[in-house]
Image 1 (spheres, rainbow, N blue to C red):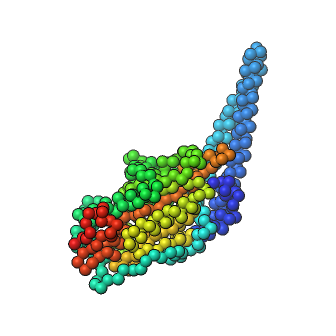
Image 2: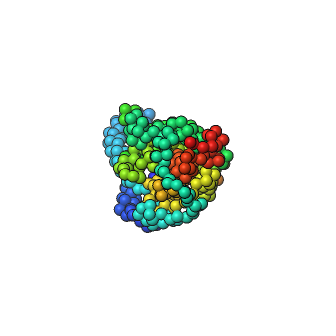
Image 3: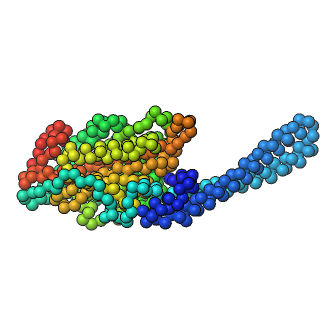
Length: 423
């Protein structure tokens, strides 16, 4: 959530930056600022009445002590009127604050100045390409055919048990999935990330804290009877560890990682792009999260991007990095780099990671602050990245490492899988 002082000081700049998202935010920002002036005036009037009521209470006490009960009772009627008026002002103040908060919830994060203009993913800026596409001297198969041929993943069985988008991993497919999870966690540990195993459900406050709620796109699974939400990513519970926390500057940087299953409704997804592992309702992911000092958060972002790149290089996958344009930027993000691996069998790029800096947007919602050198409270910066999301990585490995009569395992995973080939 954007801070009101920030919008006051940077109104014109923020409106211009929102154009990168194809959003005309001028009216909303002006309404927020108008309500803030109204809030201030109402608060001043309320404070004045409360001060007057306190002063009268003191006078009434003094009058009773001096035996002047008649005069004291006259003043008591005035305090009753002030109490009623103050109660009305408190209700008005709450209504103004609620209306202001609802408007702020509608505003996404302001894109960083590095974010390019654009409407959709075709306008994203490719900033790096690593490696070359794999070539085959036989007809390459997509991962769903390979999964069936070698009995690695059963999509039909998943439909029977839960529905489309809930695959069942089997045999060497299950072992390869587990190997990837352990490899990613070990690499995060080597990079200085402390592992946590968070809950797979969160309450409403946690969803609001990281910006998933209010759920504008209907992507979260809601357990209505308990009013809990299945997590769409480990970012949500891990970042919420620091909700309502005041840190010290010496605490930075805070680096956490965690493996969780992730749940997304993926409402409106259909067609060939969702076939096999390309788009699921339940999938596994290792997430890295950082809480950083504002002056160091872009240095932290660069480090996270390098970490994800190192994972893909160790897996021997051809990848590229895209700087997302404003139209493709997530609601809470100030800047995002997407990693995509090339699927030779599908002849397409598959997104496998997003690494984002949210600056103070989440921290404001979370009330995640730190004491600076002057002893004043400031909001921290939050960052997160997939390191990595499993489905499309697994798909890319199956497709790019396929042989005419089997599938090779990337060398770095062999100590985890305990086998070198699938055949």
